[in-house]
Amino acid sequence: MDEFLAEAYVARRDAAAVEAGANRTRAAAHELTRHGCPVRFVRTIFVPADETCFYLFEASSLSAVQAAGERAGVRFEHVSDASRRRPAATSREES
Image (cartoon, rainbow, N blue to C red; front, side, top):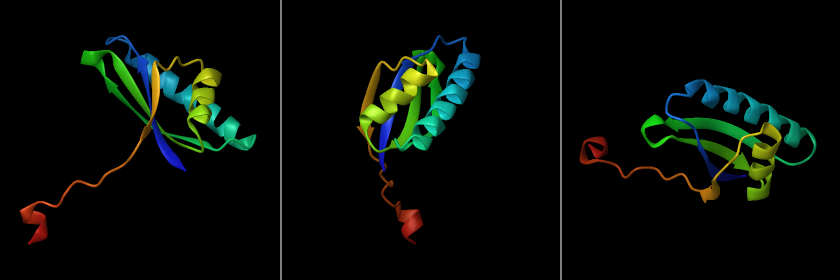
């Protein structure tokens, strides 16, 4: 499965909305997977200063991620492919 990053607006003082949205999104992802559309909610990253919440998914397609957001009632402003990269080793780690 590929990785996708979805971005949603969340007011900086509404951390409870982040947790509620994550719970609904996780449940929606499970439901979609049970119905043959593989999508796994991985985690959220909330950046209150930017009033932004990022949702990380593993999914079969971008449309699967969008469907999870729709089922969860979470409005994603943007969804894009993401890739995980390992940081380059530092000289201390190489020793």
